[in-house]
Length: 283
Image 1 (cartoon, rainbow, N blue to C red):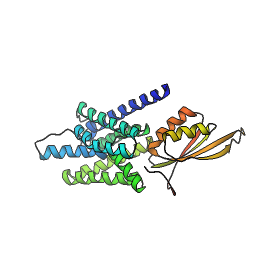
Image 2 (image 1 turned 45 degrees about the vertical axis):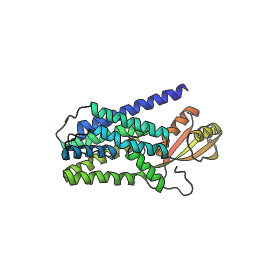
Image 3 (image 1 turned 90 degrees about the vertical axis):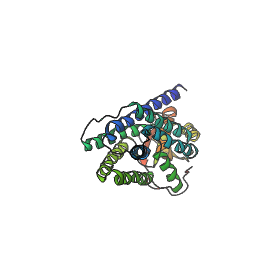
Image 4 (image 1 turned 180 degrees about the horizontal axis):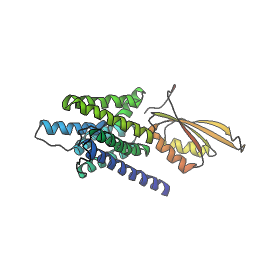
């Protein structure tokens, strides 16, 4: 119980740090340079500018980000998972708050520096949040739902949705800004990949002496099939079991916590899963 409380506390702190870094990247680098972020953050940024330019109404980016994520949070609650959705919406709410509190300040006049540093700082916030079993909401949740329906990589859906933001920004405010937005998105993607695995599905191979306890713990948290294979240590000659399980990248956090609680001495190998043939639960 104490360990669970400590893990949840650390997860909350990580989500707060991630939200703060997101807001910092946007208000200090991307917004002053008119470079657009990815996902719903970029959409909120674009809508806020269009509304303020075309109408006498001035709607803050933070408020738009929160409003856009409300229907997505409901969708995520129904289709993705409650814990993941709660922490994701918490991250969105904090990002909206920090966007209001942190003043928009131009750190550099060089648009390339703004694009790269904004993208990298944003990616650190997003990557940390993903690594600890949450997301920055919006696009991540929609892409996950679409991916489960069609069983295709999440990246293709994220690319399509981000392309809409880039093309719209290009038509409205010039293609130079749109091209620098692509630079920022590329930097963001590369850093997120370095912090958190980019693959939609992963295979975990777990060598353990506590196979039954791990099996029960995994089934209580994840609705995934497990294959148990008898194994033997080549050096020690001790009998063990190997558990093989295929998960999505968003379930990796839960699996890591289970291993830490049940058998921290288990040897675990996480590898990329390119294709799956046969039944794989998507809902």
